[in-house]
Image 1: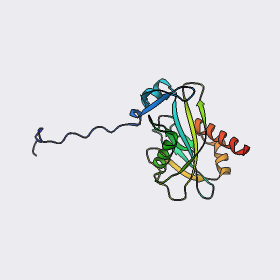
Image 2: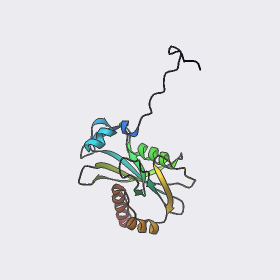
Image 3: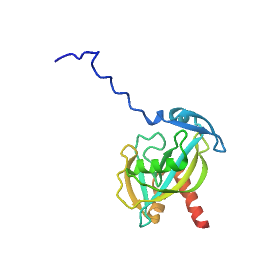
Length: 186
């Protein structure tokens, strides 16, 4: 076997970026940008940042519900009735909502509608601005394997039953509670 000539061998491919390398806006209690930081620092230091949540329904009104993979940094293996994630540095909430929905569902062409925003905090070390959207999707989905371990479309009644028996992500549970409260006032 020939030994490669180091002067002609291709450069090794760069290591892939991880989610923890992603740069986020660090914000204050009024959602004003203070600076940017890598996600790893934001999570490690419990810095206030931005997230989006998208409630996706099919034409029958069922809600896309999934179990997060066990490799997720926040709430691994927990269930969620929203797709979404962190908002990148300089990214707007609407753009992040579409990007996250398309990534997690494995589709293109999602159109979201903003509903409300709230400051989520668990009272301990996790807090972020949560911008909640909704969308309808009438085609097949191909969920991102690195994000979604299981998925199904649940009726509101089925979701209500699961919320009582399954472990759901706490921020998604709070967003859904607020979503139902908002709907009851319409």
